[in-house]
Length: 368
Image (tube, rainbow, N blue to C red; front, side, top):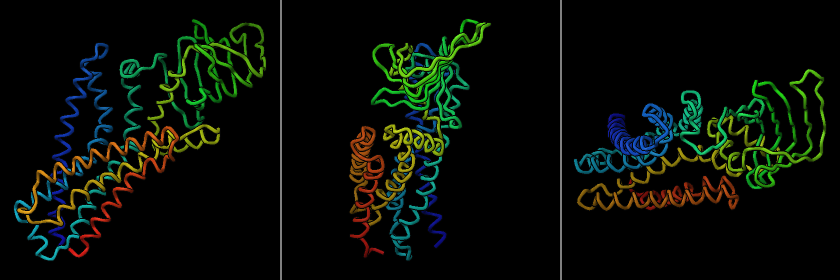
């Protein structure tokens, strides 16, 4: 039986890697063409950006490739009458599904490593290997150094007038927490420092600072002065949309650092639903590979090629998958907007389709 198991896995992985290569070529062409159409980037930067986005592309491709692998491998065995021979030799349908599941688990582990560690690492390298990458491949107006340091729990960026540090940004109330601003002059000497417990946007460039301290005359020969305040209004060049873009840099955090960041935001009383959806999505997406693999593998319950139309099966499965992605995306949107719990948003749809598969397996339980 190990020979049959290895044979099934070999056919499955042949179809899987073939699907990955074809789909990757298609999305790569689209990605490179859209990049080359930009006027402010070079061909080298477009190619580097493509390499950085490669883990993201693979994350989108792996679930569909798992589906295609099961669909094409089963159909191939059907057309050569090998599927009937496998079952006639005593290899049960249950063992066949377990074998497919084992192959899908390997893909799921790869999918998890992509989302949890590889994708964040590649995105972190973007600013290191490409100058002004955010300006060329993003929408942030205020350019400069950006980094998220979990050790201090703060996000930093630099403009032409100051260094800016904050621990979190609440999109709903437009409040920055634990703010520090370091002003410097043309000679890059520190002139003023402002600390505040939190800062809230008022209008245009006006922000209200709460419970803080201002240090002035730092670049003068005289001794610096420190002034405490309960509330004060000051100007910040960045808008709320800029801080949304700045904080989007948390996509460079791996799954452990993202969990720590979410915990820190929760302790500060900030709504973290959108980040929790990002966190749980990295956990739930690998299960999609397994679900898709088993979904297409249900064709084994009808091994006679004369009673099964490959074209109809192909259309049905892909419509099924399209429906899945639409419902799943809608659930994620509900989770990000706090209409449903993030765990429900990320796991309810995969659970629904798992139940559907369980019903199919139960109905065919007599086919051993």
